[in-house]
Image (cartoon, rainbow, N blue to C red; front, side):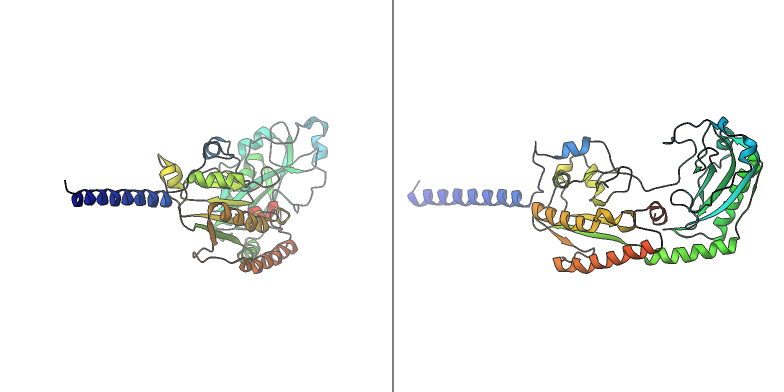
Length: 364
């Protein structure tokens, strides 16, 4: 072999090595970033830990447990219970005249809790609106979900005036009346229903207010260069305080009090989270959401959103964008913060403070 031929062979080998090396570097550069094994908050830990995501508040169901200790219903004479004054329905938590249409019911004689539970309607909705029946405990003089071992005389049936599906309409009100009447007949009680037209008008006014003051903020965290694997997203999210949510591809930032809705939600493609090999899935973006009315302002949810978004952008080499994919400069967040403070004040003035039991029911 001549020197010329040998030179060509060597040159070709060098070119091949360079091409292979470049392709390997390009593949490594564009491959999804993966979680680091053994690091704090890695993906296996995220997948195996207990779910902590609370659900939005709903009216309690009959037969569910109660924090109230068992009461001795024999301590009150049933005849005296018929004469005791009935507390007003207006209160905060459970049925409330501010967002519910309420019908009082008075039984002709005390009804055992077991009989009350058996007479409850099988469903807890009238159309798309939550429906509930409460009973007045003769000992505590507090409205509660009926429970066995207590004899009741006074009851109230209620249906929510509005939620995110819209205002209570005439058909839903009629269904409420029918269910409440069936319950009243079963326990031999006399109901006193409110005027349908008045309650429907209240529902429309409440729905109008809710529509004008409902805020759900959604932002997108987008990768600048290399994509992310689901494990990489989980690992970085866990490091800043998120925990695994109730469904694949969802992580939540828990509220300071157990049982309340999450402060923030981080979500990505559920199919990528459920794939046979999630680490081979490539994510280019994740969503960051704040449901304003569900979270009390004392949690400082928007300030925490900004702080966590900034930290995730730094550690994951991402950029924060709006829903249209437009990058958001830091100065664009200040007007949003000011608008939220005004919204909080307006909800407070209506006695529907963000994060309160009533607000969580109305904005659900």
